[in-house]
Length: 575
Image (cartoon, rainbow, N blue to C red; front, side, top):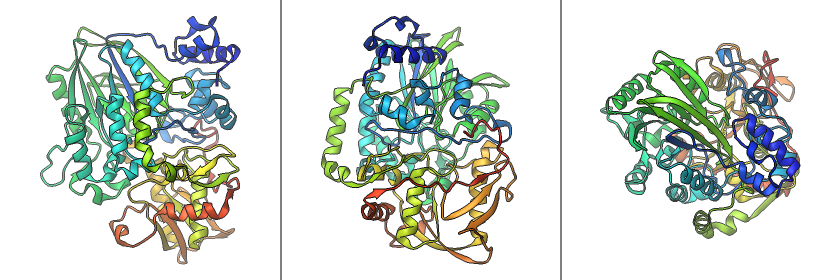
């Protein structure tokens, strides 16, 4: 696709408002103007490129941003809890433009067909090379959730992504879903594949026996004569959100007291700039930035928030920039720092959307991708069904992909109710798209995707929903332990996010009748974190869903089983 000059002038206006200095291209032809989107003037003497949560997406995809991302308490209406027009208003981007499509769900289907797919490692590689060429010494930081999320990553035990990251030129990395390959596999990659090439840092991962550091807490780099420390912060709740047995010998946690010691040690070692590469989630990063002194910037991940402007947080030691760079290789964050007199004097930040039809594929990376996929090509491409509706996942509550999974689990396994995890990863499909095995696996590819059927009482069902709601909507970010709300099939309920624990979930109904506390219900699910699930002999969820899709042949638009929201009128996190 090639934008007309008139269309691109709209892009230029929005891009300028968002900090992309493109005014010089206003009178250029369309081809030159397209190139201008990625010509970001160099600033300062230290540059950091930041990607996170790519979830093993090597190829360009569609990815819909959330229409519901509620903030509660002090976070209500604050970034990252603004969606759609509320977000555009906050960051100065006009609706109907290319950047509006990148940052929001607005007119998603129409805009996706107009502007094409996003991401892809070959296209990201082109952008990274271009920016590194214009910024000598620039470092590429990977915030984690990189080795998991696709069929090929699962089938190669993460090796496809490890090789791709080495070729991409990643300098420093931290993790989360990486740990679901098991601690031995992670250690093998760090000790062998990454040795001498990529620093895997995590100050908050220690052995459970003696409390020894598992990974380096930080790395020191010299960038154009400036000593820079990059501190790692892995996902604090890995053993809770994912199976404990996968990291049985390691402990996690936020550990901001230890983080303060690490930051102080890095400063004592001569660091003029300290950056935390985090997989906390943005709300946690914002609280942490207000508690720990001496951090210049937190480059965050986990919550998949594509935030075009950094949030500046004051703390007893000064101010800290907090950013988050989205997901699925859809964005590349560019933080330029001007360091003078041993401290950061000024900065510039851009969140660049990676539009695959505006960035040529890097030949070396494309060759690697082709080699990785070759043994699985026919299996990946097998047609399972056609979707008549838009399929997406991202958001606090049910997405249409989640609904499809719930519907399949209930129908195939004869369950009344279905629970699907509140995972944020998973690509989007447009109406009329073919659901291939690869695209189905994009939604379910984990190392513990066992399908389950369990009898639960009504009281247990309510308790589960209350627990997950507290993980998501607890007003203290340090108690928010994972993904979005569990997705529910068959069961209707209401939720009051602003209430306290035990009071959020209300009016549970099945087929219009209230759920009975002592009655037992047949509940389907998948991805259990309990260790016994490994030996229970259950099918993998992709086998269940694949059989359902093949039997359907054509999937009608899903009717979302979203909860009734209470007390969120006027919340900028709800469209």
